[in-house]
Image (tube, rainbow, N blue to C red; front, side, top):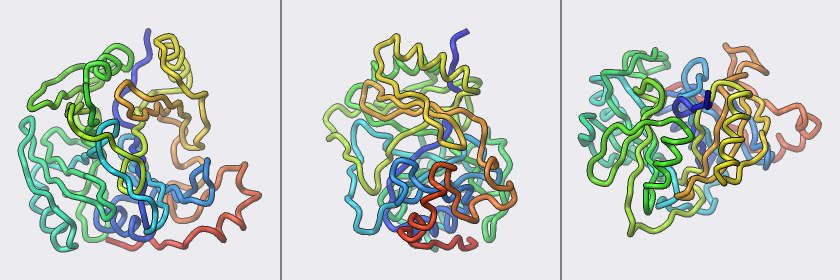
Length: 315
């Protein structure tokens, strides 16, 4: 049987000031810092992972924070342009008040595909949404001033901005196993598996829009979930046979990954669900100390010397 992905694993973006990033995602949004590590390909740069209490795939937003003076990106075609999180039905009033109290730039509340959507920016200009969903059944994490009843549950969907959507749609449906759901106003929605929050991807077609550029405030890549190493290897073979240039399997310590660009230019990753974030520290203390992969431990002193210390404050 052909291996299929089953929803969003994580989204990785570029950030500016590290402490500002921590204050926003672990503080204002109330996500848990589930891993504080470094970019394995650039070990003098942090890699922050935020998610739910256990760091489950489908809840993980990650960042490479450069600095407040880092090169700015531009959101446009060939990128994941909007990251949408799921909250329980009836929670948007709480979140609108909370974001306003923290002077977050709110773009407004709208309706889309029978959903209610609260749109806003993070401190670096990354486009985010909270989607109120009656289908959301994942448990919430009570964290400081954010009650479990209103807590962010994980991803709802991602939006890919494309000059043309047809070839990307073909990849999603023929190889990755997605199904078309609905479309309106140049937005084409697909879902994987049984559907629901965390499985949706919207292809937003805007032929005349400029192409995005990488930098602070832009998404670097989106990762799709796959069950295990065997399924990942089989999918890699299928992608290669279809003409895609796919990376070798890379050990990211907490999952194994392959990378390739889809026809519209968005960088795709396919990441395994296991082994998870508790492989190198207890679940109860996730994200509290800097974790390095074994091959970087010998450089710990130099790495720590070049990283700006950050503090996770209670929301």
